[in-house]
Amino acid sequence: MEPIILQAQLRTAVKNQIKSLHKNRQVPGVLYGHGIASRNIAVDLVEFGKVYKKAGASNLIDLQLGNENLKVVVKDYQLHPLKTIFTHFDLYQVRMDEELEAEAKVVTAGEAPAVKGLGGILVRNMPTLTIRCLPQNLVGELTVDISSLNEFGQSIHVKDIAVPAGVKILGNPQDVVVTIAAPRSEEEITAASGAVVEDVTQVKVAADEKKKAEEAAAAAAEADAKAKK
Image (cartoon, rainbow, N blue to C red; front, side):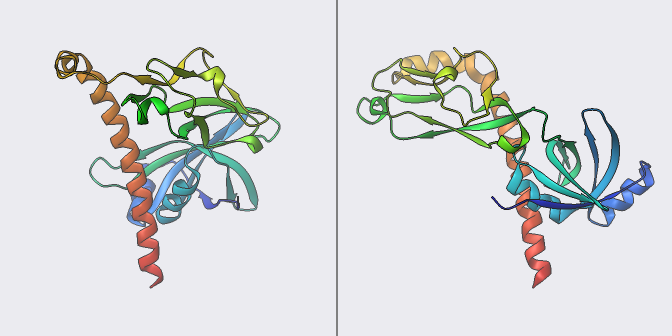
């Protein structure tokens, strides 16, 4: 994978400057790390959107800050409440000899016979997993092969997932990542609908937040493309 590069500059932490940064299509942020003093920085809005689209929260970024070239990951970000643009971000400066924790997306591979042949429902209980590894071993995704799921009730647990060398999944090894549920009758769906409203709402909020971040990154890339014409 080619290095993901982000240019940044130091800034002073004053409200007037932050307003000026937003006006000039720049995003204020904070750079910090274990045993490292935090610094206030700023980056171009379009460039940050492009970088986040590539790196997400699980890939290393080469941050060029003056004469320094630092390895960082995106730890957090804020979006405008009405517009799909980034308004602030946090970058974590990593040490290549020190392990860190990150979220890896769970993706499925193959086809479950219980779904295709029996009409079962594939339930994804854990869309992401927390991993720990050295920065050079970071992965954005963990693949779960579901081709062994032949019956209702069969599951794949955390302990069943093959991980790359140097990567450890945190949490309970017995946690169910994906499982096969039997099709529900109309009566069961009606009875269960009231109980799952709150959970569905929470999932929707998280999904909307992720979608907004993706839209902000896409909008930044589109603005960059128009600027080059």
